[in-house]
Amino acid sequence: MFLKPELTCLSLTGRKHTEKNMPNEDACFTMSENNVHVICISDGAGGSFYTHAGIGSVTAVQTIAKLMTKHFDAFFMDVRENVVRSIIVTAIQSELAIKAKEHHLKSIDKMAATFMFCAVKDTRVIFGHIGDGLIARVTSSGVVPVTLPQNGEDASSTYFVTFPDAQDYLRIVRTTTDDAHAFVLMTDGISESVFDSSTYHVLPVVARLAEFGAPNEVDRYSKLESAIGEHIIQRSPLSDDATIGIMYFSGTPAPDFDSLPKEKPVPQINFSDLMKNVQMEILPRVKLARELFRKAREEQPSDTQSDTVSLTSETTASGQLIEEIKDPSPAREEVDESVADHLIDTVATKEKYNKRFKSGKRVYLFCVLGILLVSVTIALFFYYR
Image 1 (tube, rainbow, N blue to C red):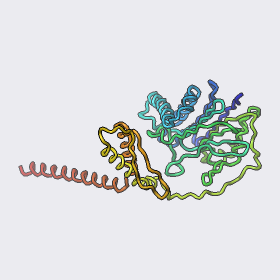
Image 2: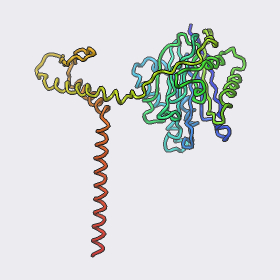
Image 3: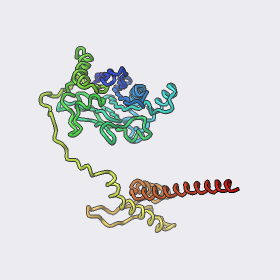
Image 4: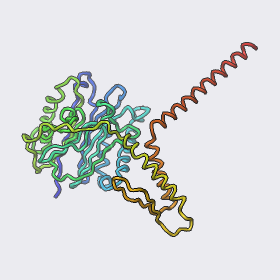
């Protein structure tokens, strides 16, 4: 028999909104249908530009809950994660577009929001998360992050579901509940107080917050509201809206709160190790692969009966084996070449883009000078006429 989780969610308005008489732009939503249990929270973007962020956050959580309760198995079983991400983002953006029409908005940008969700069916679980905030897993042995806050170029920026390429930033985790005691979802109004981003350490207080989700907890909502209000919201006049979602599994062992670590060592991160460096490193091999594909097609006899072409390259110091490319059909060749082309385009050097920019700049200057010359000629013509 599968455990039925208890769902609890609460959203409180931060002081920076209450003191300006502004509404809470966060949202939370729970739903249990078709033996699927979903909890979803969202943080509407702050700032004067995002005038309808509260509508965006509400739309996001309701759309996700309906999707997951109706099609959990499809989202869990499909191995194409890019398809899963794309469908979720498309569904939300479509609903936002409809809302934009209702509210006479020119685009969905003013309804920008982050979101995160947890959906459980039997022992299977799906997590989804775009933007900042935190999803944590509480077990008998402690508290660990499931997904981390996702910030942009600085700590105050993040990613929203309204972005054109939002599916690139949506993280999907599909796993099982196993030893889970609770899952805790938090917007940044809470996570910034309980998560140390320098060490990736979730503070023990999250395990205590999870216990407010127990079904036998008397007045759990008022106690949860009191705890968050007193220890998070009221501590700063600039406190953000604070939203929490708790999925609690009754009958599972809770951790020993007193034995949980209070801190973790700072990891040794090489911040100069950037992805663009990796791209530049593999660029020569990508070019070599493309050249090998090209030569293989040129050398392949037209009346060959073989379906295999062996491309031999020198073994590298790391012991790279000889590659064998099978089925050199025209369709396969086109795919191989397109993959190589894409990789080469992706890792194009900055110098190439600089040259292109400078060339375009020269063309632009020549056009401007040409227009000026024609204008002066016409003016002189009418002046001396």
